[in-house]
Image (cartoon, rainbow, N blue to C red; front, side, top):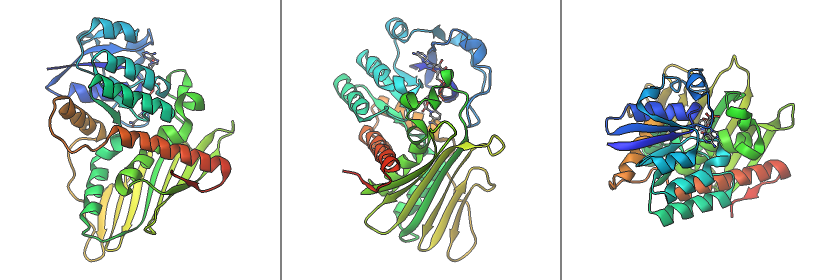
Length: 339
Ligand SMILES: NC(=O)c1ccc[n+]([C@@H]2O[C@H](COP(=O)([O-])OP(=O)(O)OC[C@H]3O[C@@H](n4cnc5c(N)ncnc54)[C@H](O)[C@@H]3O)[C@@H](O)[C@H]2O)c1
């Protein structure tokens, strides 16, 4: 039985809790959250994705408010590190160095230096570190990559990805809306699609981004074109200035020579392959969601199983690198090469 700790029981901590709880090879023995009122506060609905709000059974886990104390007192196999982004690098290194495997939420770090320190800590500890780029594991996204890579429908002419949310108001201390602590909408939200674009199409040679700002001058809605040498037109749009009545949408359109593949979590059916000949159909996808499946990947890595890695630390770092270029492009109004 794997002994698991959840560190940071906000929106994502509760999501990871749900996934770990559903496994029969894991036991959540410890929960750490700085909030002294976490038991009452965790009953409030948080976040923009359903599924995180299941009741937490606090009688089954030791509760800590201090991360170092938890590491010192518990013998853990792994933690889900679901802390605000500005805490990822330091806390990940501390956990790895104390011999604990870490599944750290995305984005890996606030900048490349933080990512490098996390990679170094993983190497020197010999422990598993995985970054929670859940979209690579999202069943419809994973199936789409499989279909496109299979080549059955020819070349990709164009692809667009959208991730649109209302203003994230649930975060503790409103850290998400503080660019210094979260990296803003580009690093926090839009990186999901940046990372998937990288996974599907490889590193772009350059990016060209534009962004709309909110009333306080913060980036709120970004559109990026990822430039490749093969003439495919690849764009992604990410925004968190949608109205509450809009809610949340993640979607894509992939235009291939012999099919169009579409996904939109707000539609029914959400996922369709529309071939050049014949009727549209919905392919079978894996059971579960991106969080459940990324945890399965992490567990298999901890157990030392031979797996084809869906995500790597270098790829997670590369996504931060692309995002930095996107921000530079927004600031300068220029196409920014990815060196
Ligand atoms: N993969 C996804 O789909 C997804 C979605 C949302 C957020 N995220 C990422 O997950 C991470 C957490 O985001 P969130 O929305 O859950 O934030 P949140 O504010 O809802 O939760 C953070 C929790 O950490 C606790 N905390 C803060 N400082 C602490 C400390 N020093 N020690 C212990 N606990 C502490 C807070 O009290 C809070 O409960 C971020 O990196 C974010 O980018 C990922």
